[in-house]
Image (cartoon, rainbow, N blue to C red; front, side, top):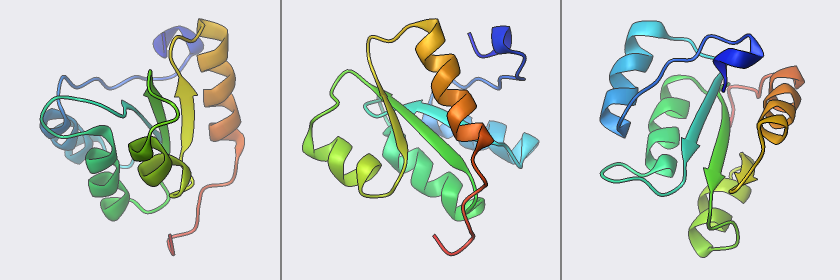
Length: 108
């Protein structure tokens, strides 16, 4: 879907793979990841990438939008959340919203 919006999408099938992809293509503008993932969770991946790139924008997607994990690792850290299920237009709107905001400062 991201490619349909005119963006270049880099994909990874795991958090570990995402770290490798990032290292080969850094910096990136936006990380889109699920909160719950096998192996390395989305919040763990986001923490690692934000440590490497403090101004990285993060969009979490999740079917569990009101859990303790979502509150602690998404809302409290100021990341965006798009609850599942969502439409293509909702994803496009959230991406446009995040990418049009000034990047976060490196003091995060």
